[in-house]
Amino acid sequence: SSSSSSSVTLPSFDCTLSATTGVDSQVEAPPSLTFTGLLRSYARLAKMKLGGLVVFTTMGGYALAPRPFDWPLFGVVSLGTSLCVASANTFNQWIEVPFDSQMSRTRDRPLVVGTLSPFHAFSFGVVTAIAGVAILSTINPLVAALGLGNIVLYAGVYTPLKRLSITNTWVGSIVGAIPPLMGWAALMNSLSPPSFFLAGVLFLWQFPHFNALSWKLRPDYSKAGYRMMSVLNPSLCRSVALQYTAALIPLCACAPYLGLTDFTFIIDSTLINGYITYKAYLFYRTGDAETARSLFLTSLWHLPAIMALLFIHHQFV
Image 1: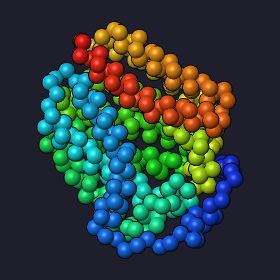
Image 2: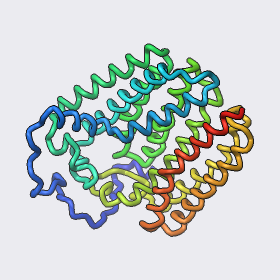
Image 3: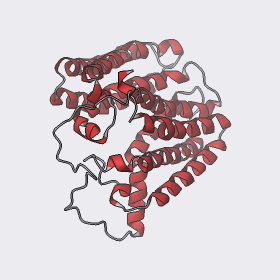
Image 4: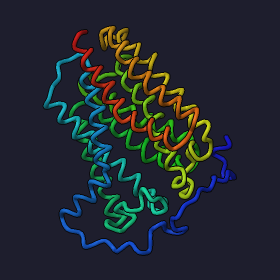
C-alpha cells in the first residue's frame, strides 16, 4: 500500500521543534539521580497511568468470568500484568529515543534527557519482562503466554510498524484488547467466545480514542516520521473513528446472548455508545481540533462507563 512505501513523503506541519534533537537548547541538564528520582524514572518508563488502565481492563475480563472473584489471585495477575506492561513500554521507549527527541510530547522522557542510560533502561525492560511472565506462569501457562505475547507484539511489531505503515493502529488495538483475555484466562485457564466480548470492546474503543488523540499530534508525528492515519490519510482517520465507534452498538447488544449481562444492558449501553458515536460523527464531518478534543474526552469516560454497566448488569444474570 502507499502508506508503507518508502517513497511516501509525510505532510509537513508548522513546528517549532529542533530539526535535529528536538530538544530546546535552553533546557537545563538533568540533576544527579537520587533514589526517588530513579523510581520516578522507572515509573515514566513503565507509563504508570497506562498501566493502571491495563490492570483495570484486565479486571474486567477477570470479573466477567463465570467463577467467584478471587482477590488474592487477582492481585497476582495484576502484578504480573503490570510488570509485562512496564517491560513493553520500556522497550518501546528504548527503541524510539531518536524519534521521541523530536516530539514535544515525548522529548522530556528519561532516555531522551539522559536521566537513564539505554543499557539501564534495557535492563529494566528485561527484568520486568522476566518477572512479569514468571509471576503469570504461577497462575497458568495460557495467561503467561498472553503476557509474553503482548510484550513481543507491542515492542517487536507495533513499535517498528509505526514508521512503516498506518496498519500500526490496528496492531496497537490488538495489544490493547489482550489484557481482558488475560483476566479471563487467569480465572478460567481457557478462552471461550464470551471472553472475547470485552476484548472486542477494547479493540473498537481504541479507534475513537487514539484517532482523536493523534489528530492533535499530527505535527509531532510528521516531524518524527511516524506513519499515522491522521498524517497520511486524515479522511480515513476520521471515517475509521466513526465506523469503529458505531460498531460498539451492535457488539454490546451481543452481551446478553453470550450470557454476560441481562437484556436491559442493551438499552443502557446503546445510550452511551450512541452518544460517543454522535461525537465521532461530528469529528468525521468537521475534522477540526474542537471535535477531535471532544471525542477524545468522551472516550476517557466512555470505557469506564461501559465497564461499570457490564459489572452492574452482570450481577443479574
